Every structure is written in C-alpha cells, then in structure tokens.
Image 1 (cartoon, rainbow, N blue to C red):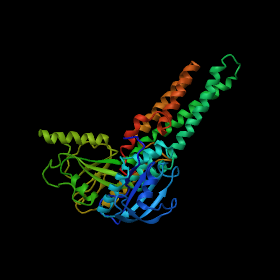
Image 2 (spheres, helix red, strand yellow):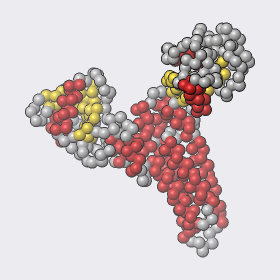
Image 3 (cartoon, helix red, strand yellow):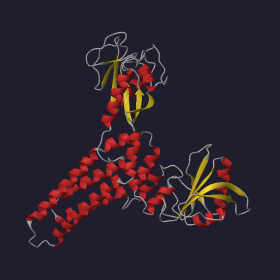
Image 4 (spheres, rainbow, N blue to C red):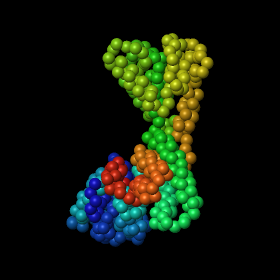
Length: 428
C-alpha cells in the first residue's frame, strides 16, 4: 500500500445503479480541489448543494450535495470531503476523471482507515472493529464489531499496559536500589500483582474462540449412515433444495455447505457423505472428509432413522429422522424431514446451541492475531514470576509490555499494516 501524501478518493457507497453515489476525498490537496470544482466551498460539516464543474473546460458535471471536513477533525485526520452525486455511472466516472486531472488518485483498499490510524484517529483494534462492522451479517456480529470499533478492547488492553508500567517501575526500583532495605512486602506485592494480571489476561484469552466464532460463524456438521435423510434434513433446515436427494446410497460424496443465521449467529451447516465402509475410492474420500468435519465442527448433528443399522453414535445432538415411519429411541429427537414434523423444535435447539457457543461477557478477542499476542504476553508474565534475577524479570516485563502494545498498534506494527488494512473494502 502506498504511503505517500497524495490526495485520495474512492466511492464510499455500493456499486451498481443507485439513486445516490458518494465519493469521498482525503488529503492535503482536498481543499483546493473542492474549491476548483465547486467554485464555492461549503461551511465545515454542513451539507450544501453545489454545481460541480470541470475546471479544464467549464463543463457541468453534476448538481451534488457537498460536505467539507477540515482536518484534524475528520475521519482520516486530514482535510476531507464528500460528494453526494446522482447515481448514474457516467456521473461518477466524469467526476472521478476530473479528480484525477486535479491531482487526486484512487484510494487503495483500507487506505482511508489506515490514514486514520497513522494520524491517531483510531488504533489498530478499533480499525479492525470498523472492518468487522462493514462485514457484519448478523446482529451479534454488529454488536461485537461496534464494541471493538468504539474502543472496548483498546481500553481493556491499555489498562493492562498501565498496570504493567506500574509493575515495571516497582521492578526497576528493586534493581536500582539493591542495597537498600526495602520492605519485603514490596517483592511480595509485586509477585501478587503479577499473578493477578496474568490471571486476568489468561481468562480473557480463554474467550478468544468465542469472539472468533461470532466474527467468522459456527460450523454444524450433519453426520450419519447413508440414506438416513441427511440431505433432506439440510434442505428442510435451509428452506430450499440445496442438496440432491436420492434413494441411492452414497449420493452425497463431498461436503455441501449452507449458510444460515441461528440464534443471531451465522452458522454454516455441512451435509456430509454417509458413514460406511466402502471400496469406492471417491466415496471413501467423502467418508474421510465427513469424519474430519465431525472432528472440527462446533456441533455435530448425529442423524439416524428406523432402518439404519445400530452403530455407536458420535457425541452430538441426536436426531431420529423419518419419525413418521418408526418411533425414536430414548434420547433421540424425533423429526421428519419429509413432513416437517418437529423441525421447529430442532431449529429451536440449534439456536440455543448457537447462543451457548457464542455466549460471552464484555468484549472478547476477535482474531487469531489477538490471541497470539495475548498468549505471548501471558508467557512473558509467567517468565517474570519465575525469574530469580531482578534484571531478567524486568526484561520479561518489558517484553510483555511491548507485546501488549503491538495489539493496539502502539509499537512495532509496520509489518502488520498491509495485512490488516488490505482486507478493507475500497472507500473505507
């Protein structure tokens, strides 16, 4: 990603035909560009109707609402503006061509938010929250992303950093005044505070899987022998014919995925090959993949029917399909994918499981990057508690502080920036 001082622009609204198209600009030449195409710059943060002109020939480009945001009080911290154009493609193309001639360039993915980060308008965790908010499909994802974008994780990690600095100061005192008769409780208090902080971060780290589940969604695998109606059950739960249904055993050979929202959580429901011994190499590969999906799934839906050969059932939610042709044994939920009997009850149970698997208090870590940094911080704190030499303990505390600072972007994150901001859409 280019890190020059160019003025950038991009479409901030969706692609395709629309009533309004929003172009946003940011950078040092933003004021002069607005002056030239509008001939009269609006008052700060007040929408004003302007006729946009091409300065090279005086042609009228559009009649648009224009907003002017002088830095540093803008999203990016730079001079910025928005042009609310009519939604025709020809209009936005003509205005974009004019902006290029006036010295602006199209923005790269995430460049507006990266400039906001570099100018101190938000930290790295908040920027990731903005990205998640844009991608949110469910209300649970929206709530989690909004908490992170509003700084919930940042405030928590900053509070830990402040406590670490305080502990490091006490540790430095023990190093600088080794011959002083410092009270024994100074050392004892230091150890107790280290243990408390390590426990807090460790407890937060344990919630990391929950945060990632909300962000990325859950995976539920449908497992069972051939011809017990797994594909029919998938179709019934999806509300459409997503899978091919046949009386021929082994029809499903590869996993088929359907995306649902259950309990306000995105869930990928996976229909798998029937579990049985087979000499067909293609079906055998499907069975192998089915078992792998069962091992990795957040929840396994174990499906049987009255004609299935009794076999040991994997751990999971036990579903007795085709209950209209035979009673379900104790401990199995009777359903009929054909008639729809008890399907609402099954959906209710799946929603309950989805909520249980994503239940959390506060703002959990939401990315593997967060969990890796927190785990490293906990490791350094553990090293500090076990270290006999004061100087080495101090070094472990400094490393813990630095690792925690990388999470918010306070220190040493240049190698991460392209990875983080490259996942944003253009215009944000």
